[in-house]
Image 1 (spheres, helix red, strand yellow):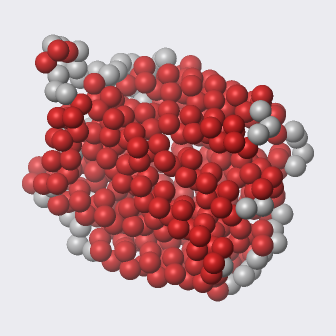
Image 2 (cartoon, helix red, strand yellow; image 1 turned 90 degrees about the vertical axis):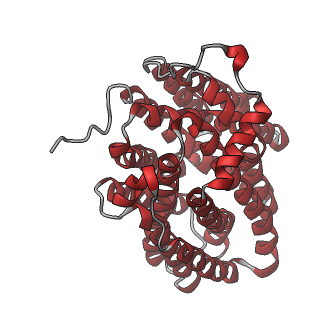
Length: 401
């Protein structure tokens, strides 16, 4: 039996760049959360921070997908990393929350173009038989930095000036941009032929929406994953406040707890890569593991139990993100993969945006513990909608995992 090639030479520079920039990204996401809360002590400001990070996905993802389908992916990867590094570097020159939020908005806007370009490049450089394993390998790399990033940030935040952390994060993006220059070009054969004959932006967007409207498999993936993303989005608002106000944890303890999320995410990627779970069951088990995480925090106010719950939640998070991404990749025509993936980001972003807004309001009105119980029930219920998910027709390869 021929052994599947998971990380081809075409993907190796992307692997190195993603590891470096993801490490910096998780450091930034963790310490900026603590920094904003320390400066404002407002749950609504935490919710606003999340909205700033998510809103561009909702507004720009369809346009980003069309742009990615029309242009060379490696150039997009290089420019987006370069601009993101510059946006982070700009924080060094301002000590104003409003300006920092604008710079984070710029970073989030550019990231809308980075992710479809990365996924499209991986799809083109991989064969269908190894796509799930390749996705899980990239997910493992990304999530292992989630374990490393918050742990690093929690340790360094109180010991060094924030400026040094910002400088380090910006440097990781610049290094990642340099590695993307080593990527072989993976341009479609007809990508640059007859540019005047290309469909208009509006017609391309209609084509993507039309395909989404016809394919019930993708609709189901979108529905279930978006519901679970909503639960995760509310939880992201609750967790930091819960850890500080209910558990009274220090910054280092919170950093370790977030690192356990990363370990769980990496473990979930390993389980998928080793075919320990069938692809069509990833959303079901992902939702159940999320529910376990939410109930553990609500019922057992014990640091060790919360750590175990976060490990389970991390595994579930990976099952949801990697499983839904792979199903969409397999169910979509390759020539439209950028558009379909971007529509997925739009739907997920919209539900995250709603979750951030409602989560901030609910947290201030009913408190963290009742909200965690509600999220546990919601995640378990939504996950049941994925029972029986399968592949049909030429994409039946999805059912073999």
